[in-house]
Image 1 (cartoon, one colour):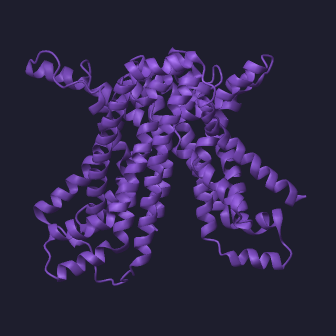
Image 2 (cartoon, one colour):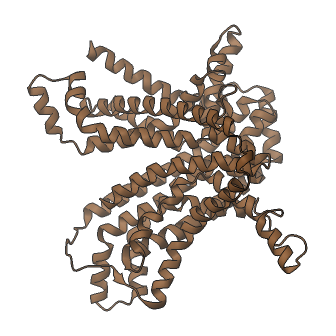
Image 3 (tube, helix red, strand yellow):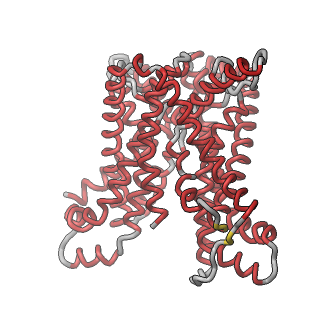
Length: 534
């Protein structure tokens, strides 16, 4: 029975997770004249400016994360200076900060009526605005750079740790000065890692809704929501979503290619294994420069935003909506917990199929599901609601729309599409450390199917499964676009409430749910830091 049920369940899971993306292709079939008119009007009026703004934002973010991530990775990997051990894990802290929370924090502190400009006007007698407006494209780029640079930092640090120290030592013995060693040895080694990290950062930038919406930056995602909500045309929104999806797919291809180049470089060279090759010791001004390079991202991406959010929180402690806060927290924890369990179960099913069957269908299923995390939440929402509209148009008495939009079914479905890939990566990592000879020995003793998973795989995968649930839990807690649209009535989450309060300029009240999200986000950062230390 297991042999009959298992392939059918694998097909069902894959179809459920891939269907919202595949249905977007139907938006280009039999397009009605109204949709054509909407898309043509948007292409003539607003889409060029949306595309230009998106390109400028992506270029700024790409340059920023590449410079900051590479500089910090080189500093902690190639050099030894006071505080280096602290910065190795502290540089990961911005991963705990949702980008929209950082945007709220800087806006509250730097806006015209904020504490900094008010203090400067009072002390120095200045008139008008002291600092330029932060709610613009450069301000959004600033936020993204200092929240997304850890992608580049992590990958570049890994690449440099493997061989850079030994090669830098060899170059020093050959008489190459420090600047030349960095330029001609370290940078070429880390180039594939930087490309992969930049691609990941750009995928997050393209998928963002909170920062661009709060700052009023009209990106391509804004065009999708305008066609969908303002013009009430889901087909036009789906067509725009396919354009964004194609861009994300191109970035994903760049990231995969860069990752393959990193693995090829690691296999091509042999690690020296010599204990004599140590990071270069820095003293004096060079040591202070290294400390400054590492301290600035931590300061701008984590410490200052936390301090900026604590100020209004402490000032309005008695007026905070504590009663509502517990309800928001319960909604967030319930949705995140349910999604984490379901995503981990689905990931285990897919990884088990790939482990035991290893046929073409299993590999294709895993690859299709792995694309989910790269898909923006706005695209997933359109892909879910589009077929619902088609079904209701054919069968008006259908209750599918109610189940998708008025219950937790729709939002959990969206979470599964986006975050099962996160759990799958963790489960596959656990399987990769498990010798295949264990499976062969178990089969020789008559243990197959579910018994193999229960008696052999489960005890060895407990830590990987726990890590998978933790990562999905945190990602769901911070997810904004899909939650904002598909959440059931009267079930606001911490992310949605933080966005709504900040949009209404109630930043003091927004500080409470925002800082809670930061606190929750620290859990995977601590886990990642411990893993890197090992």
